[in-house]
Image 1 (cartoon, one colour):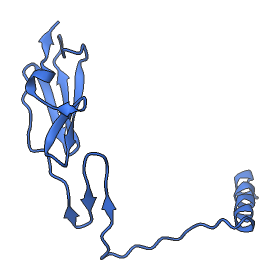
Image 2 (cartoon, helix red, strand yellow):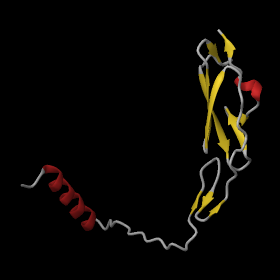
Image 3 (cartoon, helix red, strand yellow):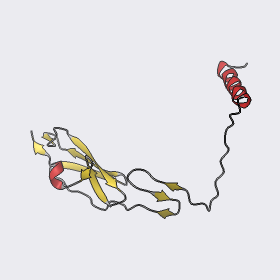
Length: 116
């Protein structure tokens, strides 16, 4: 039994073919150098173009978990950041090997967990 979505797919395919639109077929070679360039770093297959953030912050009254993309700061129960939030994200700038907090280089004073 033919389903509605199959008919729609068939009609769309026929329309694309008749209007000159075709699906591009892409082939990649294992030896080619494809580059990925996000706003905070770059990566080329086989050759990392980024620096890993090696700084692992220690923040009083908080738990800090770090991965490749940055660190998550979560204040302990009864504590908050100066912004009033309980948690914050420190992003890793892979071009400079620096942690970034609200578009600025991170310093410990920016993420102090104080008692509420």
